[in-house]
Image (cartoon, rainbow, N blue to C red):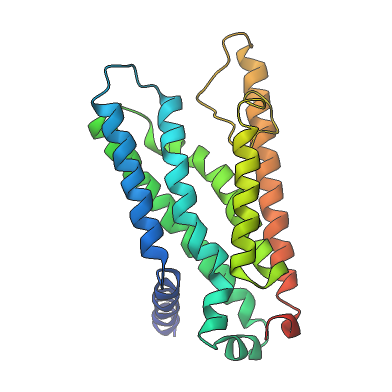
Length: 234
C-alpha cells in the first residue's frame, strides 16, 4: 500500500515536471545560463575585487528568468492543451496540481541556483553557497507568488507577464533609492552599509525577509482561493 502511494506520487511528480519544462521554458533557461556565464566571464577576467554582494546581484537575474515561465504559464499551458475541464472537474484536485507544480518550480529554481553558486566558487570567489541561495529565494519566491496570483486574477498568462515585467522594472528603478530600506525588493543582505550599525542592519534584513515571506504566503493563498471559481477559467 505504501509502495503504491510512493509510486503514484513519483508518477504525479514526473508528469508535472514535464508540464513545468514544457514549451518555451527551455529558452528562459538557456537565456539565464547564457547571462550567468557572460557576467561570470566578465568577473573572471576582470582585475577588480569581487565580493559576495556582487555574486548576489549576479545570481538574482538568472533566478528571475528561470522562475518566470513555469509560474506565469502554469495555468495557461493547461488551458491551451484543453486540460482545464479535466483538472477542474475533480473536486480539490486543482489545488494539488497547481500547488505541486509551483513547489516543483521553486525546488528546481533552488537547485539550479545552488549549482550556479558552486560554479562561482570554482571560477571566481569562495562563498557560502547555501546561505547565498537561501537569501536569494526570499525575493524570488515573492515574485513567483505574485506572478502566480496575477495568473489566476487575469486568467491570461501574457497579461500577467506584462504586469510582472512592469513591477520588476519599478522595483529595479527604485533599487538604488531604496538600497538600504526594508521596502527594497532587491535588498542585498551582503551589501552592508558602512555608516550603519550591524544590529540595525540585521533588523532591517529581518523585517525585509519577514515582509517578503508573509506577502508570498498571502499571494499563494489568494491564488488558490481564486482557483475555486471554476467558471472563470473554463
